[in-house]
Length: 281
Image 1 (cartoon, rainbow, N blue to C red):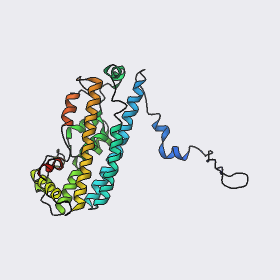
Image 2: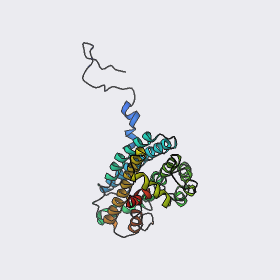
Image 3: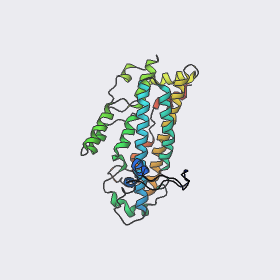
Image 4: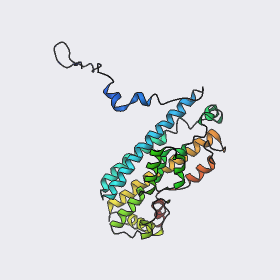
């Protein structure tokens, strides 16, 4: 290895440029791998923007799943501040994820049609990492494992996530350990099923919000969860608007109902009692 020294032997202002093999940056970031993952299927120059933006979204999904799994584990161990830190980091990551729609938000139907056929039956709802995000939010569905049967490792990871407590399940278990009246049918529910709102859970959040100073850490946890839910809602709405602009009401690339399906998704709130409880405070 060359040393970065000038004639006097003192350190030089010039960075080290001579390495044996690849650079330490490449070894860590794997930039050469990342920047050669774009295999275009059309001659349209706009396809590169679409493909790279989608790949960037996948990377953000991966980071957010890591943060939410970190938060869930911390809640399980009663380390609320560690969970809060992870959730707060995920807010900035969700903000960056949502900004990924901007390069695609102005697509006209004609522009999208230039390379839409290259997608074949590909569709965002087939994203395994996005599905893990949804599972962590309590949006469980065993049928969403079906598209991944041909990828054993991915399928196994999703199946494991399907049967594990969601982030919100861990929150509710924490509330129960703190002495709040979370009903047994919520705590002991089939974790592979979508979370359904509970009036008694709503009453717990109502009480916590009515007297925030009593358990300030839980009140703050509720607020950061609400922030997460708001960003998820914005993600779904931005997806809806971008799709509506690019393809109107046509059938989605993966055979879904397209805009109609996205409209239904956009109407749903995650962590539902955190929203409804506000009407009673």
